[in-house]
Length: 219
Length: 401
Ligand SMILES: Nc1ncnc2c1ncn2[C@@H]1O[C@H](COP(=O)(O)OP(=O)(O)O)[C@@H](O)[C@H]1O
Ligand SMILES: [Mg+2]
Image 1 (cartoon, chains in turn brown, cyan):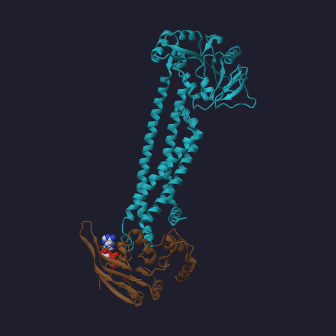
Image 2 (cartoon, chains in turn green, red):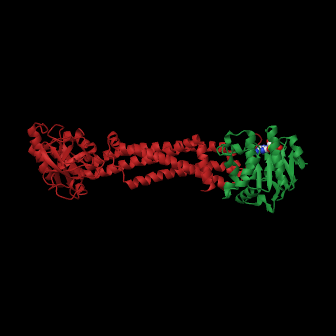
Image 3 (cartoon, each protein chain N blue to C red):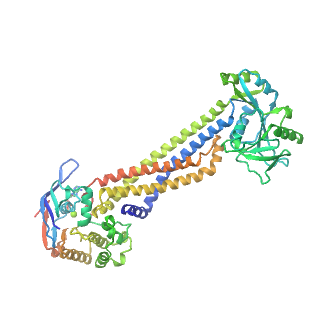
């Protein structure tokens, strides 16, 4: 499934109505089957662009096309369901629900709208991401790297065609970084559109394509 | 079960401290309404029943009986007592202009010595002229009350033998009366012949109840009904002016004394309930606000996985309904557990008649109080929830957040 950000722009304002930061009108067309990375300094607008691509931040200008849908012309209900079915998101920072078990966290997108648990895929993800021993643990007790791996499994459990990852290697040790990057690379290898945002220079060697973000402008 | 409900339950279980605090608040909210309505309604019922039991326009008794409050104590609290005047007053009262009908009543306190089985208030009435007690008795017993028969108030236990002995007069218990919530529940009723026999017998045994009145001519009070077209106040004044040593009080006055006390208590309860509500409402609003801030991240995670704003609101509402339902049930159950066994001490401490409303009424206020608590919790949580569901999720996940 194709994702096209067509001249999307966004402004953050200060309390006094002055513009604090502007993502200039951006065109972005990550390819299917490729791992596309957006690199840039912290504060350059990478997360802003990624959130727009995820349907989580309504752009001030432009359109976000996913498949044949203009995401921001849909109702919240439709857009949410579309996201659930087609977009896997690995957000910046920690994003597990601490009072749920690892398995419950991973299955969130499934249990929301679907009846049948994809047991094979679940076991495969748990196995590949090294979460086997933790599957019935409460997620609150996991380490940062383990939580990130849970977030990845959760992003993949619904078999989305598009995967968006925001600093997925942030504050991880070398082993975990490698594991996460390999996983993303493999997913791209399966023909999915993988877009990843990072300021981790080492991650660049996994990329099929690298774009640079600087001061709200994508080059 | 739907996802929203399942997750709501997990959220509640997963945050036990937060959940317990909300349950307690919701319980307080519900219990204050339930308990407040229960007390006020029981007092109103008690007043109504007391009004009906007085059963006459004017009550005449000795000055001492009225002024010392003995008469009221018998009616309100069932404190056994006695006081007498000579039965010649009956005829004098009958002769007063505007008096329609009169009937005597006899009060005798049983003794705790061997001549009596139990210490109670005994009330006697004249079946021929009575208009106050018979209508009440006929609600539970429609047979004759023959000599030697007694009818007992609902607080009196009937012995297996079905017999009671008062001042060596053997009595046969023929019926038990409906609850009134007044002191009359702790009394035993007999006809005039029976109680006179007891009075004479007590005097023979040596109890000095009668002082300067002849036992066979003693009456405790005279109930008076006023003819249509006459003012109760006028008749009352004529009795007070015309007969030495007695005091006539209108039942309106007796009731209005109590109604005044009841009004004061209802106001206090009303103010208390309002204070509890304002407090819990404020605390709830603040609490839900804080909780929602703490939960912004959690809700954003759900958004990312595809939850719509509607689904988030639904989860928050279901949580608040479950919490307030548990709180309401527990709070009300606890209130009932305290109120029902202690309603008699409430009666004593307030010195007001207390008559618990019917079961169906209790169920109705039980349910409405829980429902109000649920509605309040659902509204406050929805309002707080709206503050984040209204925001773009992209604004929530920030560096280091
Ligand atoms: N919610 C927000 N409100 C105001 N300013 C924001 C908000 N989110 C981001 N910004 C500002 O926008 C700029 C870009 O942020 P972001 O897209 O998160 O950058 P990056 O992901 O590249 O570090 C930053 O200067 C940041 O301060
Ligand atoms: Mg960022």
